[in-house]
Length: 391
Image (tube, rainbow, N blue to C red; front, top):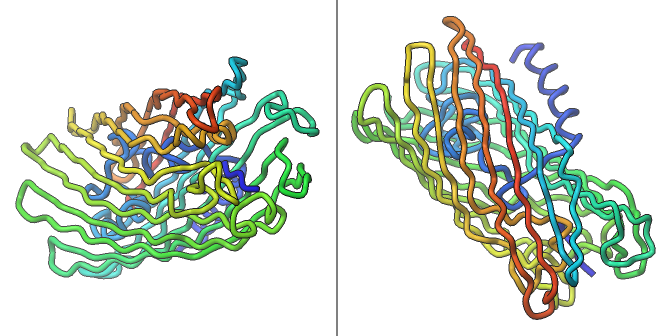
């Protein structure tokens, strides 16, 4: 039975510490992914494919690393989710008061006038906890799930011309997974944490096609993860839980020197991952998640020489299928709309501080067919800060 619910020694040390902190938890707003990677991008609704702004650029489009210069970026977002589920008219509220940390790290080094190398580290995941046994199983009454995926993307970017670049990243992934309160096909539950690793790749192009307009495109392969052996009787394909394929295009338009308007269209193929895409009635049931199209639009305004203000909006198609909603109480990833505000304050010639606040609005899904009588929903507040340094 299937149920599914992220150069110098100082930089190396920071990367190691960040990886340990990432293992604590993560929380998603688009499936198992956040609404954007990088505090600056998050402030613009996640827009980033044609607008690289920091060392997290490789998470969105590896070609963008050719245009961010020598820099180091450290960020931390805190998300406060409010998951909800209803079974037969009985309401269950998840642990919505918990503040979940989501760190990020970026580093880039320009080798010459054409080449640069760097690494972006970022995370995906879902974390849900209820104080009762919702499905009435024999467990402890502490139902929930936790998925944390950490991806490090070492990247090489090459400028074909002064205004165009291509880039490639190796996506090196680690994940940790746990489900509590749900028995597998042999009646066993409480298997504890299990983990696996995997490898994928990402490619991208970025080009300034005029003085005002920049275009970008990216493709990120499916990251094929090692199987989670403890959950071989719970997850499809004997414990397989991969990171889905995604691809997209974007633009950045600068009508004036102080104003940037940018947008992305991104496709995420959740339905290709059996543990996520299988229907509730399949031989190996899953979440019934559908493939998703995410549209994002953001604005950045240089209000003063030392201050940039941002805002953005993101809308994703609903991935939770109403006839397979039963298992989604473990991962009620229903939000479709995200509204964000952000800012960057330049401290001096090298250092800057960026901020973001984002709101993920709930979008309730009422079950139909085999999921009749079930409803799931989740809303979130998202707050983050990052320090960037030009090296």
